[in-house]
Image 1 (tube, rainbow, N blue to C red):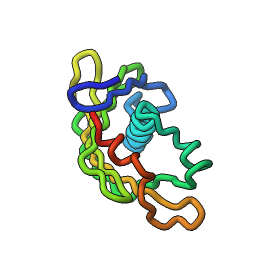
Image 2 (tube, helix red, strand yellow):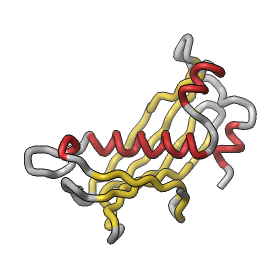
Image 3 (cartoon, rainbow, N blue to C red):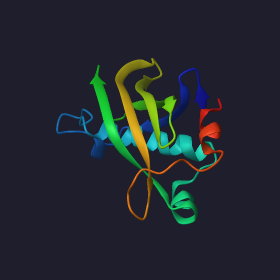
Length: 138
């Protein structure tokens, strides 16, 4: 699904996502952000398992910046967005947000940079031909 903020993906907060007070544990937002990027990549036609098997490419997060604005709680429906800020030869930088639905209150803002790596030696590797253009499209 697309939105003005780029790709948007929804997730419900489950008990396992929260601390003893029913508030989302801070590190679990990273899981939500990761899943949104994975679903964005899938929506663009790039399945990570296939990239690994056929192209011998995998992605690794190399930098994250997170600002926690307001807590999410058990049962909340969240919208997690992913928008490409920069796509280089062997890395992709994202701007991401987590908002509570239906009021769209901003809960988390994040920037994430993922490197494209050769799966056999874990060294930086260029994105496959055509992939960079496809990722920057819309």
